[in-house]
Image (tube, rainbow, N blue to C red):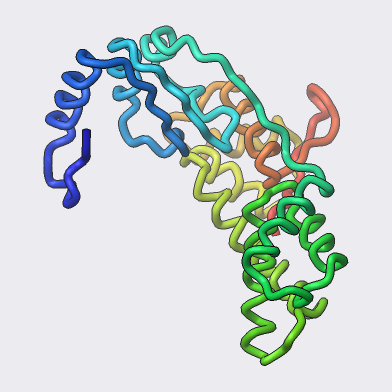
Length: 236
């Protein structure tokens, strides 16, 4: 089963082709970044045709707003993978360096700094090293220095923030914009301000789930419990 190269075939026709395929054989479909699906009905169609589904997302509550008919048909089991530790990330970066950098061109201490700065995200760690190596190369250096690492860390963090905010839905973007002006806000007040700015605000429970997701993404952090809970912007 292949999707046409030019993508000109209607989605409905592609779905029909897929349905015909699964009638002939059992398949497993893996969907990465599932939260970016434009039409979640495909999940219902696949599950009703006994297709095995593996859905991956960095957003913990990616499927929270699915219609009940789709949720019940999926019967999902959630598996959460924790962030890498500094030591795990160091080992990963060290292994990649052996394949991409000349021997002796970067010291272990600098790799360790990159692994700590990446805060458990392998993609950020790799991006830091890639940028640092390119900067050293552009300068004609034989070794990466701490200066290139520092510059690369700043740039990689900006890239990470852009990537994370692109994962937010429109409600979360409004909430983040409100919090961006005050930096710190009580949860109740933040919710009230959000309700004033959108036509159809989500209920309090969905709001809390959205905030939990942003905390997990590292965009905000929370302090306190219940009515004393407040959210603090960590986005830089």
